[in-house]
Amino acid sequence: MAFEALKAELDLLLQTVADAPEDRFGFYIQLKEKLNQARAFGYTPPQDLVDLEAELDKEFTDENAEKFPRPS
Image (tube, rainbow, N blue to C red; front, side, top):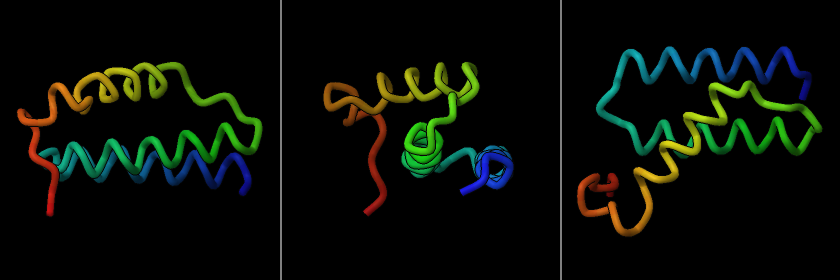
């Protein structure tokens, strides 16, 4: 996958969460997938997205899971 295509997918993902902020867990999973794709292709993801990923990792750890119910 070309880097420009991956950037476009990340932009679309960010717009989607702006339109539907209630699905934070879904956004988190999709963000991790896109950043992992970038890493797999040897690209360095933007630092602000890496920082966001780290914040969401903390938010959705098992010890905090009861605060944020996952969709069924």
